Image 1: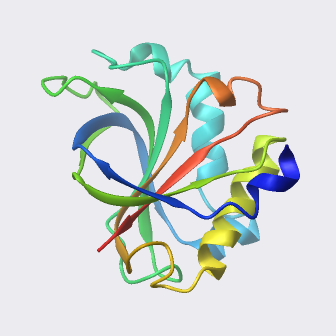
Image 2 (image 1 turned 90 degrees about the horizontal axis):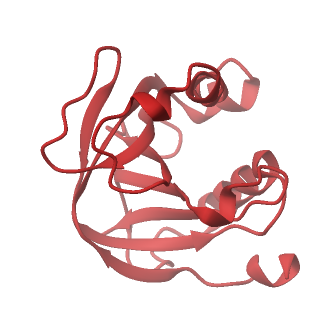
Length: 167
């Protein structure tokens, strides 16, 4: 199973708009690769501080990681928000932010199954190595998101969908 997913072409979907409440930080891929970024710390906080339980009006049990406010492309800064999809009228509690993920076309890259800390970066590498116009449209660099659903409950054997905004 794990070998076949890597060759799988992304599927293009029309995603409706939705809201996410979570914790955010500003980073870039160079910082993340060097170990000085904030994404790993945000995941640690999410679980150690029980932050999912503090998000009001959750729409489902999934975890959403949003990448938005891109300065340029994969080499520039972006804002990372880690949290959950919420009902439209939900209000972010202190210390959290609420963001709107715009409706639009997304190329969905599905990770292999395996340890989450390996399969997610491997899928991002596949995304970065994909020619800009390949996944059904040019990459928009506006909003991308990772969906951690029931397939990602076990961190040692997870499968994740990464939605890349395309034009």
